[in-house]
Image: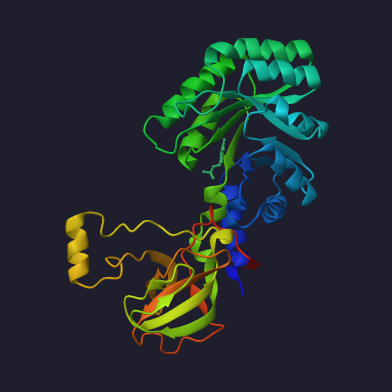
Length: 344
Ligand SMILES: *Cc1c(COP(=O)(O)O)cnc(C)c1O
């Protein structure tokens, strides 16, 4: 009945152990949909890896990984605001601060807070200007709070990234020597920076750690039903006419799983559409390609995905051998998909 993630658990864990071994100071990141595995699973895997700290995206996720059994430090990546006051009850939670106003409020509520100061980067997402860091450290000192370090969140593109990290690190460390928390440096860049800054470094990592070994996983959907349809017949919620005769295959996975209909791309302009129409392609007839493969070909959606299932079209007699209960491959982006089931 399910959209299923199949894991070769042993191979996946071997990959993660390799990454951890070559990344001293690794901080696994568990946020959002848990990179497809779910937050509780990631918390358990981080524990297996022996991580001393887990990073989560938003404050509610701290409670989720706690309930899943994570007992060590938790860093919350999205900067703290007074809306996150409840977070401070857990003394092993380390909030990130991106604005002086929020820092004042934080130390008022919890003078003994453990705090990471975020330094603004060329990302322009969150963070203090380097010119504000001295004041921030003074506020922390005056309250008797603990500075757990500075965080520098870098862009994915490599050009100038290491130089930027070094320059911001120098500015921060000139204010106070404290650990540096980094992301999105590659292994060499991280090693080089770690060797030169003279303070402990931590590297937060999600995608490369959890999703770095694609061969360790596969995604399938169950064939729930197969129906013969004739050209011109109206089917589905939207009762659209079938452009050809063939089979409608009902597969598991829908909007609730994050299965989405992508805009047609191959026939983007009118000329391409004319060519597509002349060659009789389904895309030219207004159908969108689905992530489901049947007989080794991606198939078109008959209509937008339903809540927990989708209708895809297999033209002509191509469905030979396809049976209810079969599992068919799905190309799923793990950061946007929620599985009904994980095996392994
Ligand atoms: C999400 C996030 C990460 C992890 O990003 P990946 O690309 O998944 O490794 C690291 N640092 C911060 C601040 C983040 O928000």
